[in-house]
Structure formats: C-alpha cells, structure tokens
Length: 191
Image 1 (spheres, helix red, strand yellow):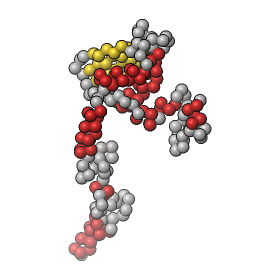
Image 2 (cartoon, rainbow, N blue to C red; image 1 turned 180 degrees about the horizontal axis):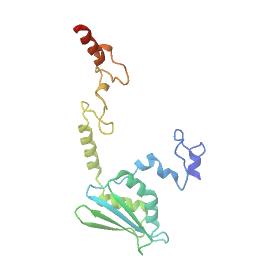
Image 3 (cartoon, helix red, strand yellow; image 1 turned 180 degrees about the vertical axis):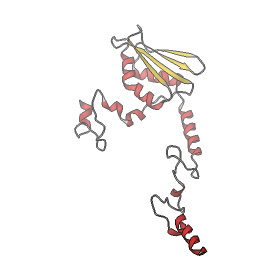
Image 4 (cartoon, rainbow, N blue to C red; image 1 turned 120 degrees about the vertical axis):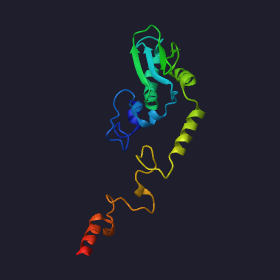
C-alpha cells in the first residue's frame, strides 16, 4: 500500500500509463529495480534450481530470496535457466548445474536473502574486475565506423554519418540522383 502511494498519481508512475502498479510489491517489476541486481553469473552456470518451503522459519530467507532477488537474477542472466521446487525438501538449498557437468550445492537454511545473495555472488558470480573488463571490450568492439542494428552498433544506417546522403525514405533525393531521372535523360539524349 505504501509503495503505490509513493508515485503520487493513483498507483502509476508518470510516463508509464500502460504499466499498472498492481499486485504484491509491484516495484519488483520495474526496470530500475531489475537493473539493481548484483549477481551476474559466470558463463559456466547453465541451470539454477531453488528448493524451498512456503511455510516455516527455516525457509524464511529462501522465500525472500525467491520473491525479491530471483527476478533480478533472471534479468541479469537471461541465459541461465531457473527452476523452483516448492515444498519438496525439509531444508532449503540452491543447486547450480555447470556446463562441465559439475553440480554446486548451496545450503541456504537459516540465512537471510542478503546473505544468500552475497554467498552466491562470491562463489559463482563474476567479479567486479571481470564485469568492467567485459564492458571495456564491448566498447572497443563498437567502433564508430561500424553500423547495423542499434542493439549492437552506434549507427543503424550509413546516412546517419555527417556528410553522407540522407535516406531517401526520410528526405527526398535530388532528382539528378534518382534512377528514373537518369533513365529519362539517357532516353531523351538517344532520340
């Protein structure tokens, strides 16, 4: 209730009229919240399973981890499959399956969600230095001379470079540069 009243405009943020802020803790579905996740797994992690119970004090931290942190982990690690198993085990645990065939078991009994995040980041997350190095490599790869889809490159089209002829879809070409005009000129010079 308190979160919905923070936005001040009937439960919706300004500029986000199409995204209703409904349900339990709708802030979890905002892009800003999802981007705040700390865990970016190493490339060897392929599957993560979460085994927890919906009742009992031993699974309290695990439930909060699933509720608050799993959406962030899914957002930051789209290549990792995440599977939840509810009420199938007496004590909560995480199990990671690596591409080498190894399995890593993490006991999360009696831990709060912050401790779980810290521990998982420490054993299977990329270090800050690795993340920074990958970002630097990505910046080097996006050379200003390259163009293609905006997702990967700075420019989509050659016409975006200053001094180039603009796209004919946006600005009409001078008639001297069109094929129809040139063909008509060639046709009139032959007769």
